[in-house]
Length: 82
Image (cartoon, rainbow, N blue to C red; front, side):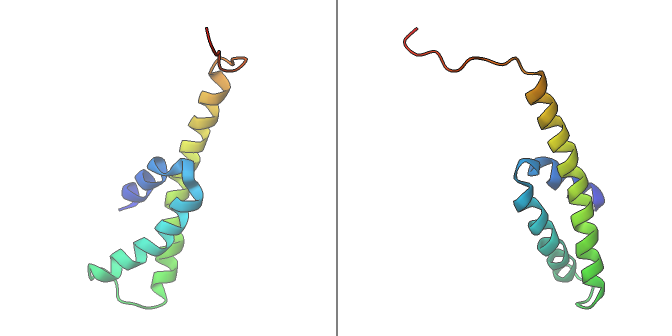
């Protein structure tokens, strides 16, 4: 399921402040509701790993975003009335 979390980070990478808490809370909830894990201290580790994997996707998104902004030609601003 690591690719799912990386994909979440790639998709929501612009809003990293939203993606990381969603992964931290959502992944353990998903694990418990599907019966993959029981509620317990192991969920804290699962939450941490979810944040790390989502963070990898966020990092890739942010790098691409900064590269696109750097390579895009700059303009003096919007032209009005022309």
